[in-house]
Image 1 (tube, rainbow, N blue to C red):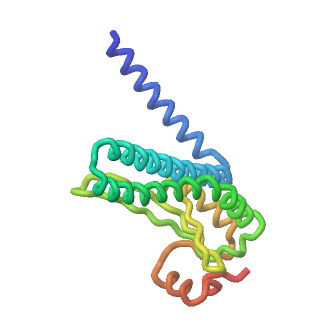
Image 2 (image 1 turned 180 degrees about the vertical axis):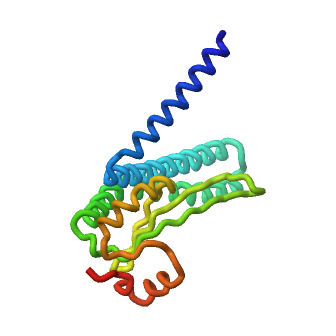
Image 3 (image 1 turned 135 degrees about the horizontal axis):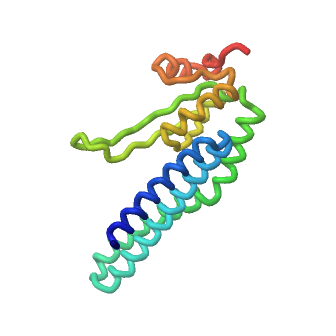
Amino acid sequence: MLFLCQIFVYICKMLDKKNKMKAEENKPPIIQIIAALKKDRNQKIMIGIVLLFFSGTITFQSSLLLPFKTLLLIILFCMVLAFTGFYFLLHGILRYDTQRNYLLKLLLEEPDKAVWVYYSKIELMPFGIKFIEYARLHIHLLNRECILLPLSEKEIRNLMPFLRQQFKRATFGHSIQNQQLYDIAPDLLQKGA
């Protein structure tokens, strides 16, 4: 009986996940973009906290067990690890509002600054088994800046009609020719008004 209850709970959770995914598809595009920025921020903060925790734990455990000369090398390694964690933590905490405000201003007030929009998808498949898959939306600007948004491929495909409507003068899609034109002068990718 207990086994049947566990199966029922598992199926209910799966159905709930499907409903959440459908609800996320119906979100307005601006909300999806803000959610992607929040997700990126949260990942950076978690990476920073984990690195700081590991560096502190390794340092403390090493100080109890190892001789002094070996301890110095481990402390040096842990300092590099801690500085990296501190960088991720600060970058996640301090840059989120700036990035969000800049992107919203670009989308709503200055859409002519965007010249090239495309997405890239990376799949790690060791031995033919899909291990990791992630996609990033690239928005290249006139001043040669690039905004990267970590989104799923499905979310990016849902956002593309909105982005085409907002960035009317931008070129969409990646090609070697577009890359060469962008490298020469970004304004070559802008379409006529």
